[in-house]
Amino acid sequence: MISGGGMILREEEFKKEAVKIAAFLMAESARTAPKSKGEDDIEIVYIDGEELQELAKKMEELAERDKDFLRDAESVKKSQAVLLIGVNGEKSIGVDCGACGFESCSEFKRAKRRLGKDFVGPNCIFKLLDLGIALGSAVKLSALIGVDTRIMYR
Image (cartoon, rainbow, N blue to C red; front, side):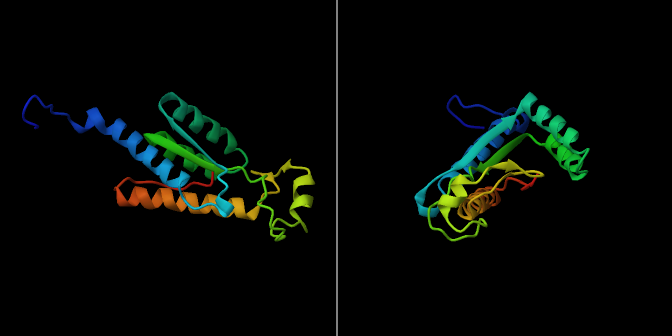
């Protein structure tokens, strides 16, 4: 209880807001994580409420080709929110390293992008590394503030 006209709240009354604040802080941690050449192509989306159930439903549909989607859909249904963190991997950073499978970034840029099993590619390896660092920054913060998280490929 806070004196001087304060309030008393039970956890049920602030739990959703606390999760949202934690997710927003995790998003900012991902956003401000170091990026290759300082170029930020990370994409972040917060989902809760009815949209969370729609996400779980879509994941159940994808379970027809990969049964692990079903397990993760169940986890999503039990979650209060989901923070999606991805990267635009079609941009190269221009170092001609060849890790993408092409001899040059120019060749990479000209390559026809196509949908594979789960991803559109090719992708610049540095952008994928940026994604890993951003994810690591987000989950590190969640651990520090005591918020349970899972990184799911699906």
